[in-house]
Amino acid sequence: MKNSDNQDFKENALREIKEEMAKLQLSPFRLSKFAGVSDVGIAKVLDGRSENPSEKTIKKILDGIEAFKKQEKSPITLATINEKLDKILELLRAHSLDIDILYELFGLSPDSTEVKKLQEKVKKKLS
Picture (cartoon, rainbow, N blue to C red):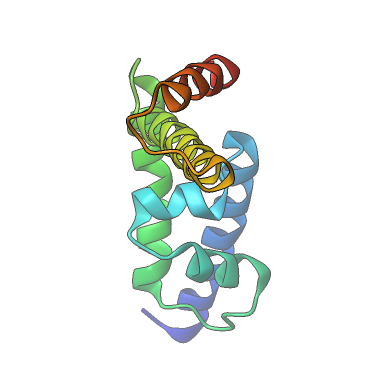
């Protein structure tokens, strides 16, 4: 590909990437899961910090957008599953941290009746 053709391809592809990401409300982080390019790499391409991204990188990003569109059409998407798993992990970490703090504050053992009561209260607050 000639240099001017290559530059035109990159400019047109970059415009398409930005438009599609805006239309799909797709963040660099989410796109990175489908493109095989880091979210930082995608952000650098988008904001111009990567002054001359390779054609291969641009194609990966475009392919990632297409993969996201295909996944989005299915009732259960990989993105949806990942989002739900992230929320579950966040709740589990918060729950575990709360319990650990309670043990420390009250000097309780994990098997005590008081801890079980407190765990139930925490579970209710998280649900």
